[in-house]
Amino acid sequence: MAIRTFNLPDPGEGLVEAEIVEWKVAPGDTVKVNDMVLEIETAKSLVELPIPWAGTVKELLVEVGQTIDVGTPIISIDDGKGGDEAPAAPAAGAASGESASGGASEAILVGYGAKAGATARRPRKGSS
Image 1: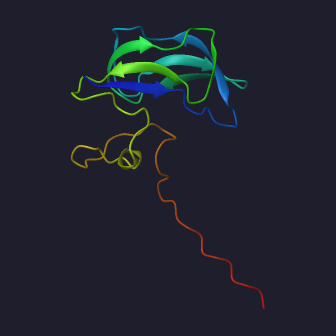
Image 2: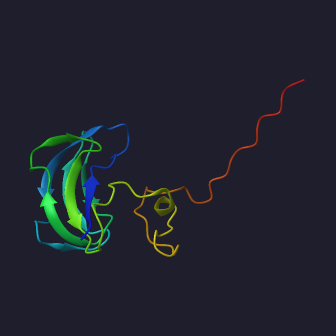
């Protein structure tokens, strides 16, 4: 069994912390990719966070009411796959949608991964 740990993602707009308002899952619950697992409150809004993996909730690592920094581990998931503990962040190939097993494309959470259609700008021409 591989245990994956999900860290509090950056909620954007320069915010560096959030308060845990409500857990929508409990240890032992089964979750699918992009299921909403908790609600956080930032200085600007209430946000529901989806989980990036499917599996069984192993442990809730923070309590309701706690204010935590971005990057703090918040939940661990048993993905049901063999192997040792998996890294919290996806590998470089996974960020582009490529699966570690076989190279097939898989869904990525909105806001994660490489920007589609991003191109480099040409350098400015010097003035004469």
